[in-house]
Amino acid sequence: MSSALLFVTLLAQSQFPHAFSHRNVGAAVVWQPTLDWSQASDKESAKKAAECHELRFTTSFNHLKEALDDFAEAYNQGKLDLKKIEEIKKAWRDLENSEARFRLEKSK
Image (cartoon, rainbow, N blue to C red):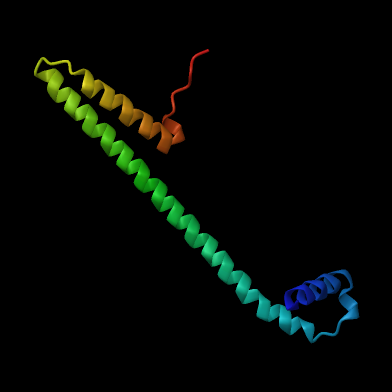
């Protein structure tokens, strides 16, 4: 009930700014820190999302590197291991999913 009353008051104040006394300006000042707090939360969540994205990319890239190293070591010994090739393909798909820049364009 009180939130509905607050909403109607704020809506009326925005539609008819001269109809209300200047005492309501204090209420707007009290409301402002709440908005700043929610914006800080958005910045923090964006930072956490960027860190998560970076961690996923790093993990995917390291997996691809390890798969390539394993394949190269086996190849230098004269072995062609199909399981290692499949592991490279899997690691590449994982990297593509974590970073759009590594997606190969499909030929038409």
